[in-house]
Every structure is written in C-alpha cells, then in structure tokens.
Image (cartoon, rainbow, N blue to C red; front, side):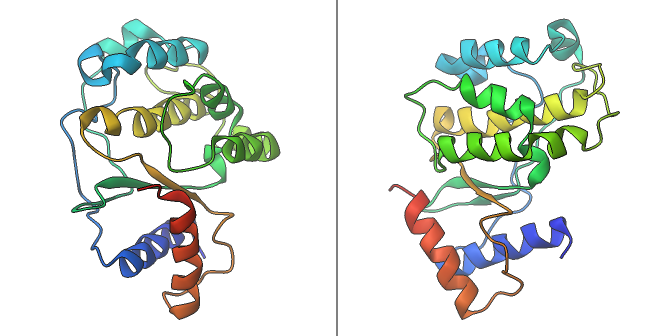
Length: 199
C-alpha cells in the first residue's frame, strides 16, 4: 500500500475509534515555516539550538516567504490534538539529532526513546531518501532531510504553547499489516491510542 494511502487509512481508523472526524485542512496562524520567539515562547531557545545544530542558515530562514504549514490531521473537541504519521524518511540522522536536544520536561504522545531507536535503525535508509534535495534555509546536500527534521520539531514543540494537547505520532512500522478499516484494525489502533494518549 502506498505510504500516502496508508496515512489516510490510519487517520480514518483513528476517527472511527474515537468517534471524531479528522480535519485534514486545519491551519493555525502560529504554524508557519520559520521559527519566531512569539510563536515558540519558552521553547524558542530550543528550536533555535536545533536549527543551528542542523546547520540551518538563519538569515535565509527568517527572510524567506512566510507560509502556513500543514499537519496530517487534526482531531478537535475534547481530543484537540494534531496527528502525524511518520514514514521511514522521518527517522533520519537529522531527526535523531533533534530528539536528543528535546528538553526532558516536554510532554509527548509518543515514546522519545522508541523514536530515537527507530532513527538509529533506519537512519541510513532515511538519509538516502531524496538526498540531493535542498531548501532555502538548508542549502546543502541532504538539506531537505534536515528541514524535515526541523519542521517535525514544530509539530512537537508548538501545539502545547497554543492550547493544544501533545501531538500524536504513529509510525508506519507500528501499523504494519493494517490494510482496511475493520474491527480488527480498530482494535489494534485503539490499543495504540490507549498507550499513547495520556489524558
């Protein structure tokens, strides 16, 4: 099953399990493609340190055209969280570096140790994924991979600063063997949610 289709399926199943229709076009004024102290608040020094450790070009970052970012899905109401589906390319060396710089008091709806372990396991494959791609603020070989890791941090650091619950992350390896929205799949996803959603 193509990764994009798998993401849509898992999003649909989560909606079935919690009885909440996902919003796929949700945007937030604070969820943009550059880091600012106004948006990040107490986590601004964290994201700035992460950006510099990824060899980002700060001048290029701050001067590029501001654009709203997209999340994979948003579940509102009593749930009020962003959902992100992490494919193998998210488990890169750059992502491992960012996770190692997360403050210990940051609340997460996924196991940071598990994500670090996945990075160590899949980083060679992830680092090769579209390795030639560059971006304005990561203008070097592998720059798109670094930008992906940087922007993944936005999804972990920003929501709680703006009244949302911690972002829910599910990776493709947790849901192997799920190919349809049926009773068995809902049971599997429900177990994952019960383990991750700490509210």
